[in-house]
Image 1 (cartoon, rainbow, N blue to C red):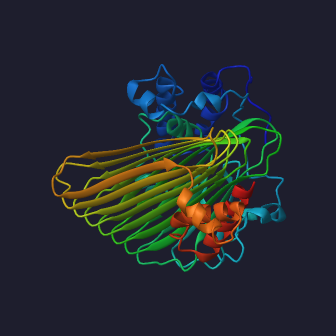
Image 2: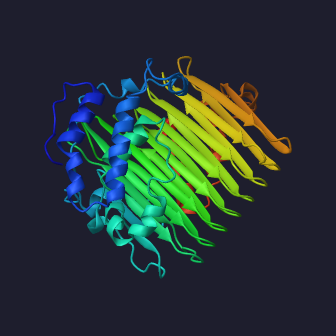
Image 3: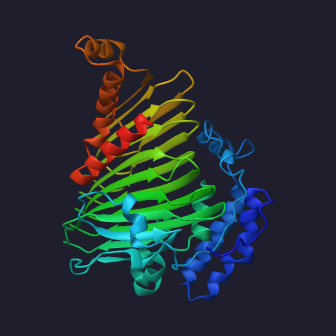
Length: 451
């Protein structure tokens, strides 16, 4: 990591401005496509206009961050260093983050930059592209231009705008028409910092007509003693009759905070599923949007978060049904203890003339201490009349009757509680189609609960 580029005594927004003007704007001279240069400048101006979400923001933004004070995560003296692919990490450093028995194409990103030397993606099917996003700007300019910055909405999202202005690199995945990947792509995004720093990472996934892919993202950290803020953005496009299974593991440690903006876009007869499992972080804000933008889309979004200490996990989801004859299913679950806080805000929008929509949304949280809190706000916004839409939300403690039933059969209290929590979390984890990943997450969740 290069030395910090600016003072750490300024407010976060001012540090971002100085960093951009002193260092990041200079990237425009290194062969970056003109469209990307213009997009970065526009995004930077959007960030300056919006500022960090707070009580002085526009009403729409204030409402979106009602239960999440992101300024809490920005109080540290973060710098905005510029990273390269010259990392001190070696293959053995990644062993704790590999998924046992998983046969996958592995792509490694360190501090937002793709590191080919640590990656392993031999024997790819013909036509499939896995490479750094920065490299893809030059190798596939027309293809990348069709999607990069086209799907992610930054107008009301300061951190998505910040990512667009500052992103250095990430992963570009392209699966051409008719190709079915026989094994998953595992993206390991590692934060490795010596000082408090903001890490910007950007991914672009494109699955073409009648293609099929599974992508696993692990967000992890080797950092100790430093505070980090990971600012992630993802754009994913699934073409007609395409299929994408996406899994996200957020496990950067209790000293890390992260904010993530994701946009998935689907075409006719496509399938898209994304499952988010949040295990360890100080503050997490996930802004996840899915757009079934053509008829006969099948869409699934699920999440599980386990929060301890004073952790704060906020999942904001938007499912925008913009075409007729589509189905969607949403399920989010949380387990919170100590003084942890969870937030779930799920918005389902059915646009005018989007008839014959089946949309189901459910959220639930278990509080294991008197000081833990969870806020749920399900939203249905429907402008069509031939629809089947439902939502439900529940927050409470473990079922006393179920606990009594287990203890009456000789099971100890701690074991009985563990069994109930495993069953609660299992409703999300059992939807994972990759068996080694499912086993790995079952173990990680159990370890986290024991901690």
